[in-house]
Structures are given as structure tokens and as C-alpha cells.
Length: 274
Image 1: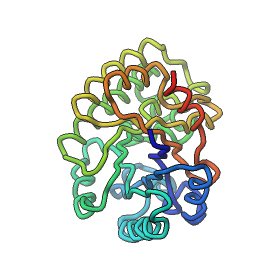
Image 2: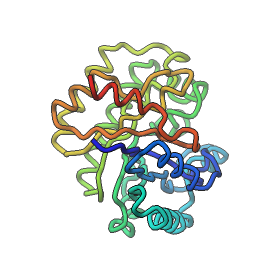
Image 3: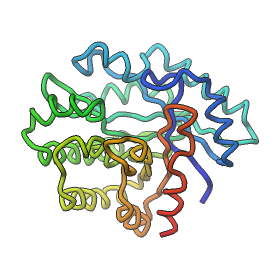
């Protein structure tokens, strides 16, 4: 197992840090990572969420995508022989608008080495809503729309299943893995509780899809640094089942700041040993 961070962000992330990429990569080198995948949020369709201020923060505009790939290519060349830097994206599953993603990705198919497919959005009050914006927004836009946490969670896992199926059908390039599979738990201590049985049942239903598609799993530790979560976005028991089934498990710091690089690696290492 190489030391690999497979989920990271850059100054092109509008809700991240403006720090230069060298700060992130130098920290990864200091921590003796051998591979550091850069997986920025790609553009979204115009008006994807009905909140102009939030829309500005979610992802880079389409016009910046060529500059982003030049940026990544520059880092690959600069650190060649020191650390492997795959070019990637964290691609959202856009329910009802997957054609947008396919068209957006097509020109970059030969460049992309890593794709993290994530579910950040669900239909809700007023249109699409972010599941990971704020607890208050979740309560108003999703909990108020679906009526219960159970109903929101069921819809979330339905979308994760659909995301896996779409990614396979679309033939996304590079190494594909599913991002922070339990992101629905980000605000768990600030919202009504979810039964462990529901989560376990839906994750176990996802496992055959991962096996069938050959997709990996983003073992995302960002939840450990979220006060309302306090745990990784994938439970240890599910890692064990995935490993036994042959699903590739890739650590992801989901770093949005240089100081996030390597965050939770010790947890990941211990979980893999167990």
C-alpha cells in the first residue's frame, strides 16, 4: 500500500484556500506521501442551486477549467521524481443533468487520471439543495421538504446508487472512486438521529455495485474535523467488508487548506490494519 492522498483541493476551490499548490504538495512531501491526487470541483450548470451567493462558492466557472489543468500539469512537472501528482476532478452526480458533466469532461478524457464521484446535492425546497452547506440550510431545505431524516437519507443513498450506475454507463476516464459515501452524516449531532440499521442496510446494498463496477472508495477523513460529525465519512465495519470484497480503498484528506494535508491518515492506517 503506497502512501496516497486521493482527494484534495486547490485555490480553484471557491470555498477553500487561496494558498498556492506548492504549500499543499510540500506538506505532502514532508509527510512522505508518494502520491497526491488533485481532484478539484469542476464547473456546475448555471443556476444549479437557487442561491446566487452560494452558487459562486461551489465550483470554478467553466472558463477556468483549462487554467486548472495547466496548473495541475505544472505541478506534475515541477515535482516529477519527487511525488506522483495525478490530475483529477471531484465530479458531482447531477441528477437530471448528467449530460452537462459528460460534455464538460469529454475534452479532458486523455488528461484525467483520477475521478472522485460525489453526491452533494438533492432535490429539495426551491430546487437543488446542498446536503453539506449548513445544518440550518439542511433543516430548512431538505428536512422540511422530505419530512424526516430517514426520508432524506433514503433519497441520498438512492442518489449514490444512481451516481455509481451513471459513472459506469458514462465510462468516466481514469481511476474512479465514490466520494465520502456517508456525507449525509456531516451534521449528525445537529439534526435528528439516523438509525444505524438504516445506514448499515443502505451501505451493504451499495457494496455489490462497487464490486460490479470496479470502482474504489474514497476513505474520506474530513468528517473528523467537523464538530457536528466527529468521525470519518465511512464506518470501519464497511471498510472491512469492502476490503474483503476487493474494493480499492483510497485515503482522502479532502484538504481545502494546506494544514488539512494528511489529516486523519493515522485513523486510516489503523483501520486498514484492523
